[in-house]
Image 1 (cartoon, helix red, strand yellow):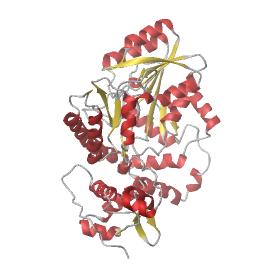
Image 2 (tube, rainbow, N blue to C red; image 1 turned 180 degrees about the horizontal axis):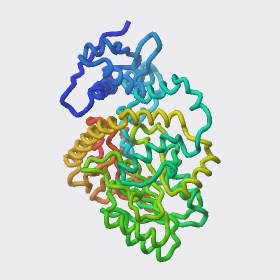
Image 3 (cartoon, rainbow, N blue to C red; image 1 turned 180 degrees about the vertical axis):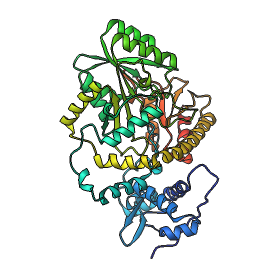
Image 4 (cartoon, rainbow, N blue to C red; image 1 turned 120 degrees about the vertical axis):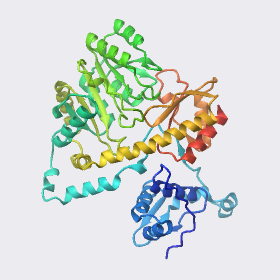
Length: 469
């Protein structure tokens, strides 16, 4: 028999935070403070819904989040319990000695990632339903065979329509290749246009996984500094005068990691230089959907005068990081080369998942999810901004980003950023080490993702960082 619910959860129905997230965070706090310990049983979803006076589906959604994150575990025909492996966190020192067991150092519970979405907001129930429905169709046998190496045809048509209507592009479905995430898109693009000895310009600081893909194709990287309005175009021009540049990799919407937006003047100049020197602009628009201003800036690839481009996007940020669905758009010639290379390493993509996501797009579920998620993330961004002003105002330089899921902060004082990283790590707080963004010398700055953290976690982390700066 399940134990009665021992905790009081105060729900604020006027809060921007979804009710199911309030429930989930309250249970996490109870586990972290020891009010709930390993092996404790939770009441059933119906009983909990009655106690909290909420819809049962809301409780189920909260429990699904906690199970997915490892806080709870479900045992068939027995119930839902606090995970056993969490017991080492809450035992007192005396209890540890009495039990005479070796307790491993607990893993970090507070992580400032590089700007990942909150997986708890992901429409997993809708996606699971769409997935199941595909297998219940009489024609399900049709999706079990091989499909086109460029991806599901209807899915590509849907992506092309989205890019044309939402991002100002003018492409057809045969100019798109669906990939297993944006990293695979980066790899395919590299091996499509690069060869050993080619030079590629990259932003510094920038996105190292992309750099590794270019280097794997044999290219030599040349760093371009990032200014307050995007990459240094003068430096780009100097490189072009002395090197045969094959491509440039940019994240112009919300530059990774600094979050700055490439100005219109620099966009137009970059297009002019690309056409003049015949190099390809590889545009990584990794979080276009998360923008809190009037509207997202249109991609460089949307400008009709641009001749050589490869545009990369992803659904991993829209739904969840574990969902490996990305895409790239380019000329027919490039897409044909990319398709041929794709067949060598991966005959086709995940046709079933592509159809499942297509169903969510057609039903309007993705659109509704993004509307909901943007409201949540905007509220979190504003709260994070208030924390920076409260605890770090005189210690750092930063600009409140118009979009994306992270802040870039630069300490005013001369500090050892790697030392700060290690000190925070010893306190159970993880941030992205600055050398992960730096081309050569370590950049003095921190990228702090806020989307997957609660307000309490944000404040705890910022207060700890403030003491070290």
